[in-house]
Image 1 (cartoon, rainbow, N blue to C red):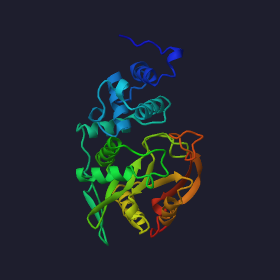
Image 2 (cartoon, helix red, strand yellow):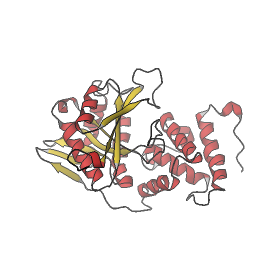
Image 3 (cartoon, helix red, strand yellow):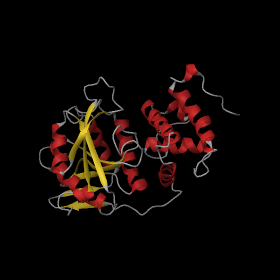
Image 4 (cartoon, one colour):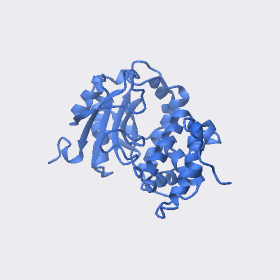
Length: 298
């Protein structure tokens, strides 16, 4: 059956907008794009939903996706589709990530761990991390600069999506251990949400580094040490030329870590996933190029 144009009254309905995007608008656009690796509605849905979920979407959402997808993920999938239509996203990149997650393509494996002196270990995620990670995400002090706490289910989905990033991109947020105990994560992510700053507008092309540590790991340099190790791997093995980091303006502790890493502030922006009138909306952007990393020659 041929999809009908979306009625004006339905434009504000996220589910109707999504169905019109994948059933009509993207397949129509594909007719003029012989270079696109995906042509049909179900292919576009697979690519967009997998990238919004950080892995095969059916592993975390029951079909039909348009009815059961959490609103924030459906919104991200829709943003990615709009970015494809406007030429701001690379369908080849998004499709390859989806195929890697589904075992249809293969990429060189990422290392299982990075060992740092002093009992610090960056490693891939394990099921044993689920409980301490959920506790970390439910701690109001840890999440003070996020709009809300994470539920246990949200934490589990986030942990699985973090680890799958290594499969798709060769890098991701590492689980961090100190003296054999999980204390949080540090690492890099492709920015899949279009962001309102240079190098952030094209989903999947920019890379950010971030961290989230349990309170007992604060104030002892763990974030800085682990981030330096993650950056060395990112710039070296992965060949990523530059990264960004950003945080809420009032998050002075994270901003100090960014500065210790040699990152430089590059303005402020309103985070697109946070309401404009929310006190955490204003974020500060930092940048670091591989050639400017402390200890590297100019």
